[in-house]
Length: 86
Image (cartoon, rainbow, N blue to C red; front, side, top):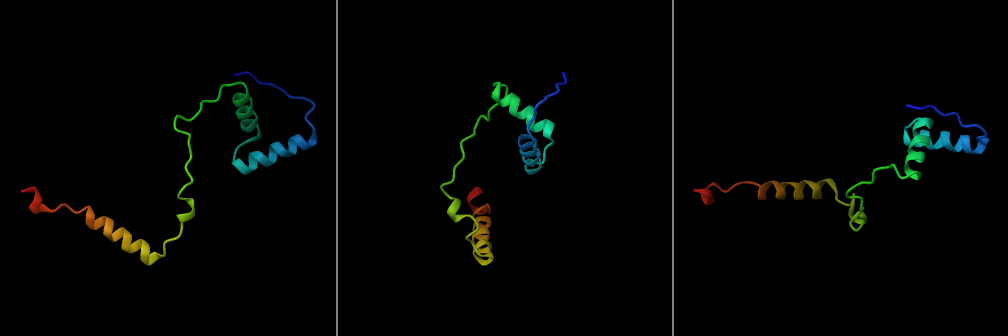
């Protein structure tokens, strides 16, 4: 692996790099490498990258009782009726 030194980094840029690295739980080195790879076209894209948000407004709306009722019904429907399989 090759090592590079980057000179002339403004304090604002350095601070933004540090903040971004901290937010993403990565090192500044990894943030810079990711940025370089992405902008040079080396980043591998996700095969299935479309994100759906059409049900987001329903997320977290069930009470514990509603969740238990729904979960119980799902489990009941998963039971195999032995009489049907004779």
